[in-house]
Amino acid sequence: MNSVENKDLQYFRKKNSKLIRAILSYVDGRKVITFGDLSTLLSGDMLEPENIDCIYGILEDEGISLINKKMVVEDCDGDFDIHDELGETNRVDSQGMILNHNVSGDDEIDDDDKLDEFEDEAEALEKEDFNSGYVKSGLLKDNNSEDPIRLYLKEIGKEFLLTGNQEVELAKQMDSGESIIENILKNEGLVIENYYNLVNAIYSRVEREEFFKKEKDREKDNNADYYNKKKRITSFYKVSLKPFQERLIGYIENKHRLYELGEDIFEESITNERLAIKEMLKSVPLYQEELRIFSDDYIDSASKIKDLKRQQKSILDRLKIDKIRNLRILGRDLAIPEKREKIEKSLNMREDLVKEQITEAQLAQKELERIEMYYEYPMDKIISMSEEILKGKQMMQHAKDQLIKANLRLVVSIAKKYANRGLHFFDLVQEGNIGLIKAVEKFEYKRGFKFSTYATWWIRQAITRSISDQARTIRVPVHMIEQINRLNRETRYLVQVLGKDPTDEELSTRLGWDLKKVKTVKNVSREPVSLETPIGEEEDSVLSDFIEDKAIKNPANHTSFVVLQDQIRSILGTLPEREQEVVKMRFGLEDGYSLTLEEVGLHFNVTRERIRQIESKALRRLKNPKKTQKLKDYLEDLN
Image (cartoon, rainbow, N blue to C red; front, side, top):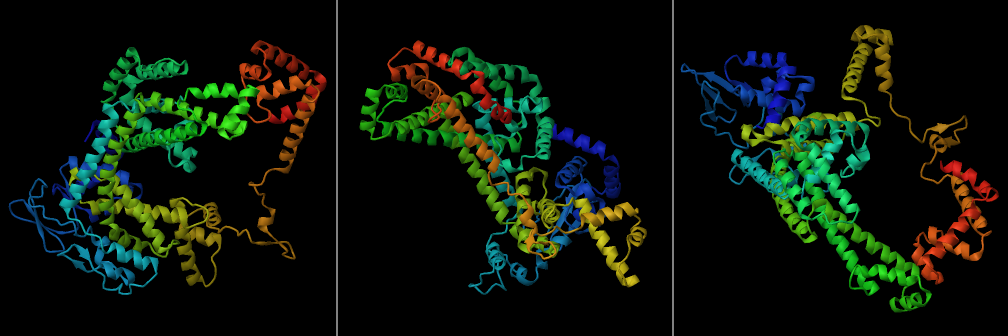
């Protein structure tokens, strides 16, 4: 357990000292507590998986073993015999250590989660073939059934069940893959820029859009998500990065400055500073979430390099050019009428298409150079290291998949207890599967806990959270759902007792709430109104007819834009023809492609200084108050 985890446990122990004392008092020197008893002692927020992890760690520090619900019999020598439901016995000494740990991976986690409780379609999963490790179906005999639930249950019944040793081996395999990725990222200094971004995020040196630009889930980029992520990053990295932050910021900003000036970022002084910072940052822990994000970013960058190089090669072949630096020469030749005709004929391509291809190739080259600058490695080296990282990720993913598939039936057994609460059974299973995936990612085999027991907390939390989030059209918080359920329960009771619908005052008395709270909960429990609700006395229209369509362009804005274009053309028409052409070419008013003074000069066969003079003269004429007055209203709209 690292120092950060120790600090978290110390903070948790101090914050929940009464609860910890109650648990230790309940154990009373036995050094053993069952999961069922622990669940009874905990309630509310303490059942959150993050809090359960902290409680596990504290019990481990106290030398207390967590066991499945079993009969515990104390011998006269102070040791314990723990008998499970399968008749197997584990010997636990007076220190709480399991002397003969022979718990199979197929054992049940507790009374509430027995797999043999399957009913109806889940009965197919009950019978276990101990010889092959398969659970055979006694119910799903109809191979032609198209019921998705039936087919799903049949498929997960084919998966092997894992023993405790197999679970540990898979967890070790996940750790090995993670170590491969972390070693490459740290030893090669690929996370220097990432740590710089973390420092900026911690001290609010960047806007929230920059903070989220690498995230895969941009649609969830809301204020709560932003502050939660920033809080987590601050708690994990602020202390460990503080000794290096000034040197790190100075190095990165200097490197970016040199890159913008077009200087060599691989010169000796920059390289030496990079090596020194890389060694310093090796001591900074890299947590799982950042490990995933950083490695995904690196693999994405390597894939982007391959795509950009393919794009460049295709463009160069199309333009009949062998080197990227010749693009600028081709661009200058296009500005000369005689050469432009030859180029168009040779390439069988119009001038505007050639310019478009040149722009795409130059932008691709600029992005390739930026990626090289970001990671400070040549493109070939970036690609080769990304392949090694990909191998580590594949190793992790293979182990995760096996661990997940072997426990899919556990999700079904838990999900069936939450049926008829507003979500379809299959939706509950899928939400439980998401919780199972999180449990796999956070499972720590070194603590000695059985995976199925640990996963139960995450599966239950995912299912209950999904019911509160998705069962209603408008999301209602979990605590409010509990109050609504209680209100409905007492309402039904009073209907039976009084023979009529109870008033708010009667509900207030029954629940012990004030009248305002009863009305608030009732208001929250109201169902949403359909968009097809008839409106008006004759019901000749529906509610949706009166709701604005945001997807359609505003006619007023579109008309204003068209009129603005006409006004600009009208004002330019007052200039001499040559000045009109210079302004259009310099500002890209025709095709959006702005030309330099030199390129415009080549077009007119004059010097760049002459073009500058013509442009200045044209702009002075356009600044005439009589002409600018026509555009002032549009300028105010833009502002």
